[in-house]
Length: 283
Length: 297
Image (cartoon, rainbow over all chains, first blue to last red; front, side, top):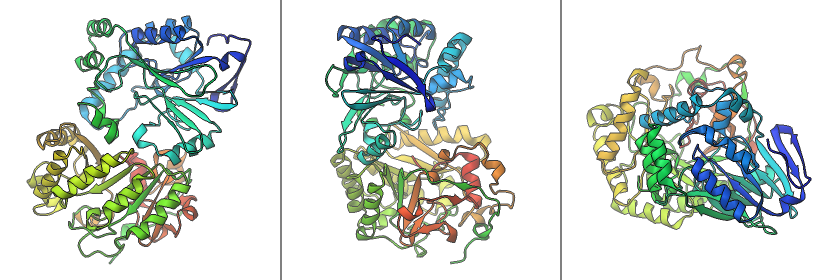
């Protein structure tokens, strides 16, 4: 894990939650999730965040799966001093699970999930696993008088999906209250959204860097929080998706995955999408 | 009506599932009344089963509001056949103001007008409305022996009406086949939906519960099919829906949608008083544990 800048402190608290403090947390912050091996998109997002003056960059997990060459992700996280927490995919790799445990009902979706997990699993070294295993499960800090909680799925479950159309205001307020947080940032679904709740708490799903958001536009999504505000901006960054598509073809990854990278539309594992999100896609 | 023996068998050493939160509220808006009489129905619904009655909007609303005060996430509306309840659209509208909702139907009563009405609800809400349609075979020859003469054709008509208004239902299938046939049959349901005009097929497979009418079709639970503390050790209660949901019927609040005929499964009159542990003493509890099944989407 990279050193903290700005003379802050870090402490791994109960439940493997990393507690941070430091002046740099008051500056611009970037939050990204789901690199899914897409190192070109990750670099583009990290460079964009740096250009915007991010004093800290956080990754909310799920480094592997889907894209090519998992080993190209780790050096980028190091180079940009990214503070990373574990996603369910990272835990599965750390714990040497045989599959990602997605449990789709469509046989071909299960085959795709299995194939992409096996691809990443084979290319994950013991050293990578130990690094993944040491990642915290959440990150907390105070910023401008608000309590921030960063997590992968939801504040209570690493693999809970928080979709925009399938999460009620009351439920999100309860999650925030139970987690003693005013501002929750999560990922896991792959589609970004944010909502300010009637009680003032705020949820930001930062989307995914590694796979487009099923909107017909290739690109990477992440959330940028400028200094002195709690209102995040959901940012879409262009990158050379054609180069990534070619690399995926060289690695003989499924045609369907490559098509998603090129077109911006999800082609597989669509059954997890609630009706509204599914209705916005073309497949 | 006579209660199947399997329900009354209770295990003395059954583990207790904690109540972790109220994430989901089920509402049996049509009671046990259904226009079909499926042979595997675990609540023995039929046109004449009044064990649980149809619930009016006035009866449902206080439960929706109580659930909202408890931070509920989503609602599921079931029966029987929910579209037998004339107030269903109003009930759905009321629920969708609070959170996402799902309606579980056999689709046989969904004509063009009802489909358009559902479409209107979908468009007016910022939350998802899911429509779950039950079917047990991709031909009349395989479906109708379980769900009744003519039911296949009627359900396919309903599916087509939904497809026409751009609603993409989740097909719900009870697993009446062996594990060996599983792969081929699942794929078959996806293909069937594509042929029915639903270009983005979604399928949910549920295990069979050996209670209700299923006891006569195949068998009830054996004595050994009960949970013990041994089964429970190291098990994540989160997997079981009864840790985070409750079911409302005209007779009160029950632990889950499966056990509404079991006297001990009625836990109270308000949701709040039912948010306490429940003893998993039923054969159906064993099925949920063994299959990791959830009635959620």
